[in-house]
Amino acid sequence: MSEQAHVAAGGVGTAEPAGAVDPKELRSVMGRFATGVVVVTTGGEHVHGMTANAFGSVSLDPPLVHVCVAHSAVMHRALTSTGRFGVSVAAADQEPAVRHFADRERVLGAAQFDVVDWAPGPLTGAPLLTGALAWLECEVVTAHPAGDHTLFLGRVLGCGSGAEQGALVFHQGRFQRVG
Image 1: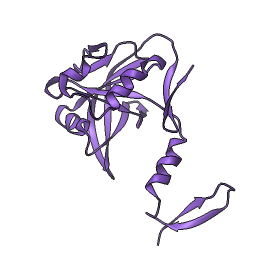
Image 2: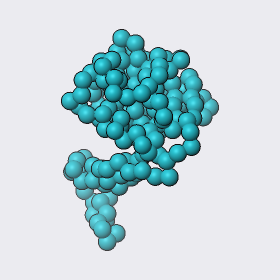
Image 3: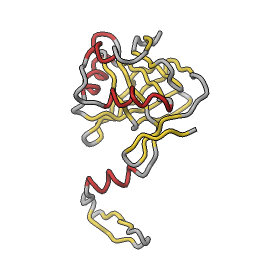
Image 4: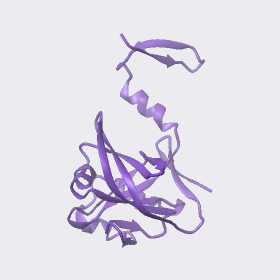
């Protein structure tokens, strides 16, 4: 039987069978890892936006990024349908927009973008948030099922940077400003 180490606060480990990890404890543990915050968007007939922190760089050559999306999320269907997406890296003052796209009760479709400033990406048509620290436009090259999520690997078609300013991060269940 496969085992994994469980390290207590004092540094003493105990072995538990694989798969015995409490999801609430795992969420708490992962919450200690500060992450950047992005808004992932799709354009066209399946226009949609979603706040994400499971996003990152994979490779510079070729230019690849990843985003993880729950199978149950509207964004999962949108990414699968369009095959292209935009990413806006949230600036410190964009918490209201980030919270908006994290709200599962918000209006969907094109109307969800009525409350934020944005411009269509020139390569994908995906909405890109005005004032973001940086933005990328990507094409899905592969999708890998990963538990209750799918890891989408995207080839970067284009990218750019906004003004130098602080960033918004997510740490211990809260948005925080840095820089």
